[in-house]
Image 1 (cartoon, rainbow, N blue to C red):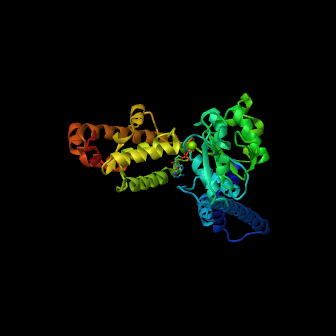
Image 2 (tube, rainbow, N blue to C red; image 1 turned 180 degrees about the vertical axis):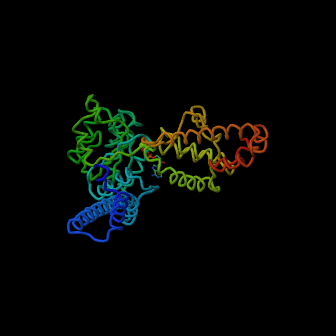
Image 3 (cartoon, helix red, strand yellow; image 1 turned 135 degrees about the vertical axis):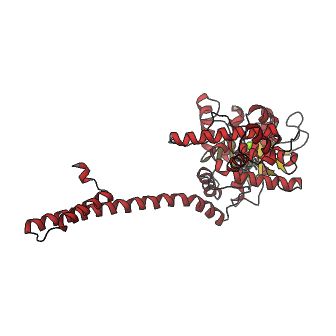
Length: 415
Ligand SMILES: Nc1ncnc2c1ncn2[C@@H]1O[C@H](COP(=O)(O)OP(=O)(O)O)[C@@H](O)[C@H]1O
Ligand SMILES: [Mg+2]
């Protein structure tokens, strides 16, 4: 019964066929017969309507899905159209777009902004973005690395001092707060501030005034505060190493910069950007990247984030002649990573991948490992590999092409 009720196009066709053959040889049709046919036709009609509705629903769902894919690109274009200033490169990564949109909104206000995220993810760059997009852009952007200044000197660094205020204070000195008057003060590594200095900072932020060490009168400053940290301030508050009242004072607007491994879709853009940037600096043509190195760059996890990627590209731009290859990578990476994909690695496979897909990925991997090993051994001599292994040379060439491996790149051995 249930299969008879299945609402599928195939089932409907079958029922039409049954109806047709039932009617085909009849000469007459009595009233009950007509009614029976009518019932069947009506049921067929309602099933067809149902199917067409499902179809329309599916199409609608698909078009909605498609629409979801568009906005990221659009969001980026809209940011740029609104003259959003960003001294770098950004793509369609939704996490980064969200950060930029938040900062864009915050920039025009005087609200304090905190930028949290791993080292090298662009926190300082984003602090400058806040400044550049605010109406303080013509006033100074002053940066203080709270982790790099000895605790005892930080107060004078921030608030300044008068001559003779302490040993070594040989002349009056303006602090960073004053320097950043009407502009933006960027307090980097805010999590490194001692509890003592946290109190002093909080007081200055609360009253909007500062006091140079050794001077009684206070100075009113109009300084926008942007902070950054790679520490977990919430944990620090629980442990009592970061003051809650200071945290809430500086974190009215907060964003988290995603690590590079979570925005790998931006890699090609960033690589190209740094290739161009380093070429300009080093006065050379942009370095070419071998397919093997390219594969490595795509798979590497970048614990040092964008700064590490930038260093790698500058390094290879400096060391490689025309095309850079994996031996040009920094020693710490060469030592710690297996540059050929391992047999057991499948690369990026979706969580719901089927066994067949996994099998195919494993075969691809095996082929890559094999080809690269043989090419290294023979220094890129495909004919010799074919002879050694009694394989068809054109089959080998086909495999190389499939995996975009260039035998030429194995010819020159760099020291
Ligand atoms: N989206 C980006 N486009 C281009 N360069 C970037 C981008 N994000 C970061 N960088 C560069 O990466 C390096 C590290 O960024 P930085 O802001 O110093 O990171 P953090 O302060 O989080 O340690 C800097 O040289 C910066 O210019
Ligand atoms: Mg930094």
